[in-house]
Length: 190
Image 1: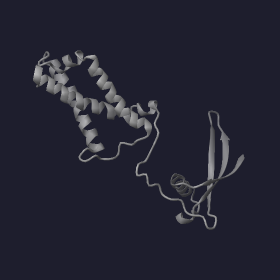
Image 2 (image 1 turned 180 degrees about the vertical axis):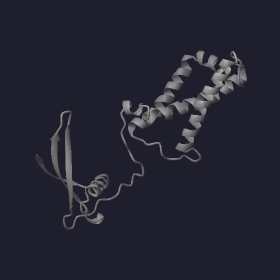
Image 3 (image 1 turned 60 degrees about the horizontal axis):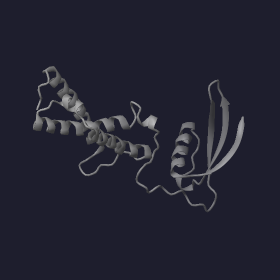
Image 4 (image 1 turned 90 degrees about the horizontal axis):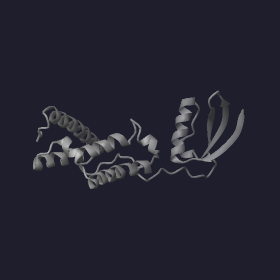
């Protein structure tokens, strides 16, 4: 059944969505400079588990209206719930684990070289201050993700791709060094 027609002003995000929907339905799309209003005819269909809404967009442009302006923010924002951020394929687990592994590998190797304690022994001797610093590191990595900041800009030689590769290498390095030290009977690797 038809719910009605809704007139919406177009923003850059809705223009992209509308042009994608129009291409999918093989409808005629007005030239980009003449877009200013989106007419949506909504229909609902009830299934056994949920209500599905389908739309048929159409474009109009009143005379004398200005075309929508592109966003100049430079950063795409998105929102992620804590549950979605911490999923297996979410944005947080690999980033946080990689950062912690890089810190752990470097500090563990330095401590092992200075004092001769194997890696697994060092983990068992963590004090409350070290655990607090690691928790703050997790929070500092997770907070921007939950606020909608994408990790897609390079900072000098520090690029997101390099961070992922180095984090993976540190995670593998920690696992290999821990295994080698454990299998050798607790003999330090470094």
